[in-house]
Length: 110
Image 1: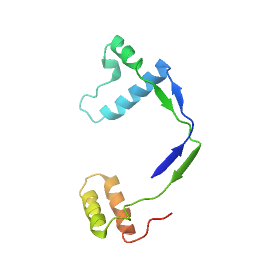
Image 2: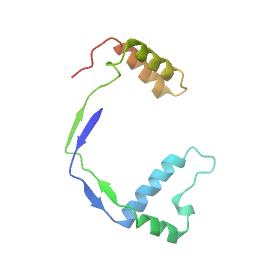
Image 3: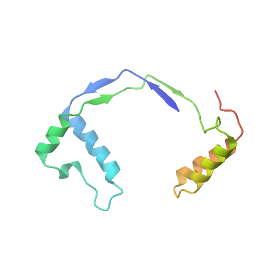
């Protein structure tokens, strides 16, 4: 868990917004056989939608983190979560399952 503190600033620059919307679309469309791109939409449509978006940027002034792996849950719940994570095909889920197994029965830090 991470709490991030900072003073947000509003960004209404159309070029900045378009760059970020395009990057976000590219990221989420990358797994598609034919990824959609913002540039696939008509220019007037893009301009209208970008005009309705308010960008917010928060420069990080302070970050507070806490390592949580469900240590406050029952052992049965923890083992169930580990089993569910281990059943997934991706390496991140299996790595998290390993961390959880190492910490079963331990008190959460902090």
